[in-house]
Length: 508
View 1 (tube, rainbow, N blue to C red):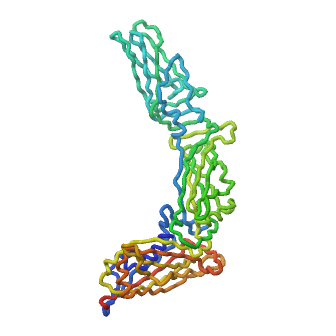
View 2 (cartoon, one colour; view 1 turned 60 degrees about the horizontal axis):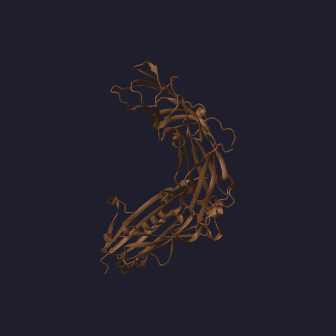
């Protein structure tokens, strides 16, 4: 709402501050008589959604599922990607010594029982160390790494022509090969033939290392594992400059959005979901649905697709969300985690691709539906009177036509460069826009019009010109507040404003 009130006050101060001056000045009708200029300053017909555009730093105005205008706050999207799952298979930090022939190496992962994995990039480094003082012909094989039915092989000659033994390093890429472990192990083997004696020999040591590998697709079984998602906080700045009054929200909601492209069953578990309000300590949102819930996932015919799960928390399934929100929310903090195979039975075969991810976001919706009682905020804007140094006094005429069922009141206090209040726009906070009449369902049934004259005398105007800032006190109230009216704001409702000013010169 801060931007809304600043818009109204900027418009009232238009001729003085230039904050909303129309660039098409050649279209203005100016009449001059006895040192007076009558200038049409502003005319606008704006849907309420546009008026509320950029309502806060991290908020926007939208339409909720009840077709009402709502102020919406969204948190950062928390995510886990396939890199978290594939990490154990894509980078061996140390060379694996092949100390026997053949040699079996257990995959370093208890989370994912790998069934198969297709590589699309990376490097395999194999180092041969031999003390035999003859050249050797070696065939090194990774028996579980298959392409077109054939295992991965490196064919090498270890030269030894000068009578000294030296190591040899070979580098190849596994791209296009599929790793098919045998009971979670990789099997290595080699043959080495002495080229001088034409006999098979053993090599002292071979090492194998996989670096910077990329897996484009994998199948396997996810055992019972937790995936910790980062804790996050959604800040609600609507009440940042609040000073008095309140809003009784009807049907506010908090929605959890989850997109999942992993082909595994996952369960979301909530460890924290609290709201900090203007009064008292933060409170836990009481919603049993939040405790734990299964999320949708693609099946084998939907590889590459993402499935969405939406969990909406509102008064229909939470005993306290409405009361908490009506205390004035400042922020919502949440910590959600994902658990695989949560039922701890035999896991089903699943899959992941290099683009698979689990994305979790939270949205808070504050619908403009409720009872708004003298909700008052304070803000400041900068002023610049340099365009009107020669003007002696001014009178504004403000005409409003309002389809929104909210009354608007304001006061503007002028502040000099010393931070002192030197004058006020109005004698006291006054209504400048009358709320539209409403029917029994709280929806406006017409348009309210109001005309406001704001004269600023010569003496006051000369004093106000010293101001460099204005302190805005902005207030809105439901139409029919005396009867505790519950109102609804719809997206097609408009606010129409016309404003003119009479500037007088040389009146002294």
